[in-house]
Image (cartoon, rainbow, N blue to C red):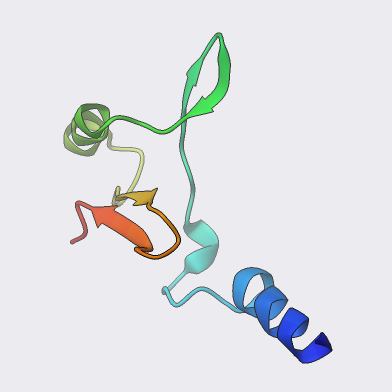
Length: 76
């Protein structure tokens, strides 16, 4: 049991991300008066990607059901 718990904690929290300069990765949300954070819409993401110059690269992801994993938009 301890080994399983450690493996989950290591994989999710402790293991370095598989990206060069992973300490520079940021997560950005939309805000709304009634909600603390919102997932950005695809049209908003495309606008940000076309017009924002503050970031070197912008990508988007969305979580699906546990069986299908993560969908990455605009990877490249």
